[in-house]
Length: 125
Image 1 (cartoon, rainbow, N blue to C red):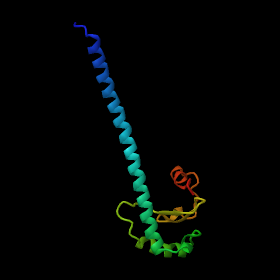
Image 2 (tube, rainbow, N blue to C red; image 1 turned 90 degrees about the vertical axis):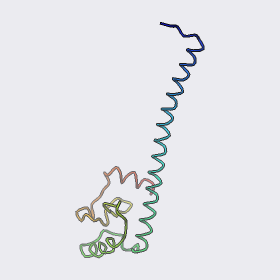
Image 3 (tube, one colour; image 1 turned 90 degrees about the horizontal axis):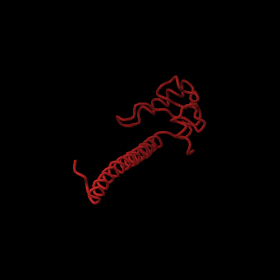
Image 4 (spheres, rainbow, N blue to C red; image 1 turned 60 degrees about the vertical axis):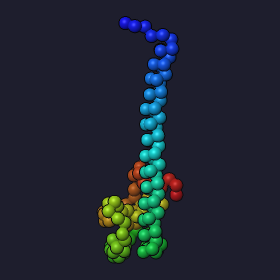
């Protein structure tokens, strides 16, 4: 087996580290880009839904949990809104994480304090 010279060893080790650096840098860059795209998508979706809801609803419609009659009236208004095909489920809750309105009637007036996704979303408020 042929022995490599010091320069050849240095070259091979350098190429190996450059390849390793490229792989690690690529993974980090891809992760950061994906996270940024998801954040932009969340912000745009939130902005779009806010515009749709404020155009159709008044703040009084969303202050307290709705009775059966109020919930049906609010349901008509909410279903009329155009959220697009990517919105599968809608919950409206207050800062205390109590559901004021939902397209799933069993959730109305329930507290979602244990919901980790909602806790993360509401930490800014």
